[in-house]
Length: 191
Image (cartoon, rainbow, N blue to C red; front, side, top):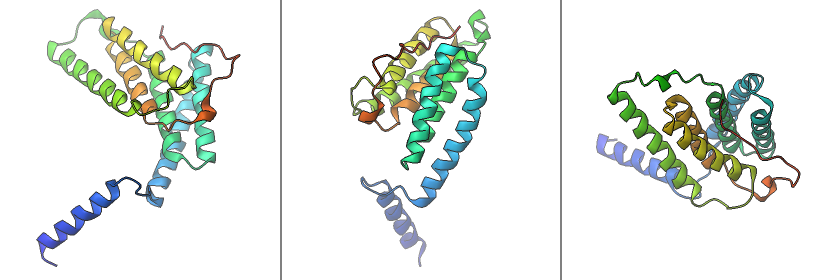
């Protein structure tokens, strides 16, 4: 087959994969399940180091991830656990950059990345169900904590909270995720 025909065939195949309604595929499902498994291990280690109130939020995300795996939504589970990882790091990071000893170039790059992450989060979140779900609570708290950390010059923390918001925006939304009436308000602000 001539190279032009091969390239056209490959391009058509890629376009078909990106088309709406295209099945995620067994390879991707297995990859997402492996990602969830790896994230779960990291989250279990990180949860032991986080205080109880934020630890409850991380535990809730881990439970949702287990439910997603049980229902066959491996990608959603992996994104939940990725968010949990970023939240853990945001809460644990000792952000020494608050001293102001970073270059102007690095600060500009951090701010650009921060804005890109929050824009991606916003783009993915726009079509989501606007219910009182744990995801909504954690998404909004992550964005707020990210902005606060950035203002304080806690750049590592700001980026981790922004990454958490971006990961949460990729999680599938569903009615079964409503917060129960007796659940405490989950707080994310780091120490």
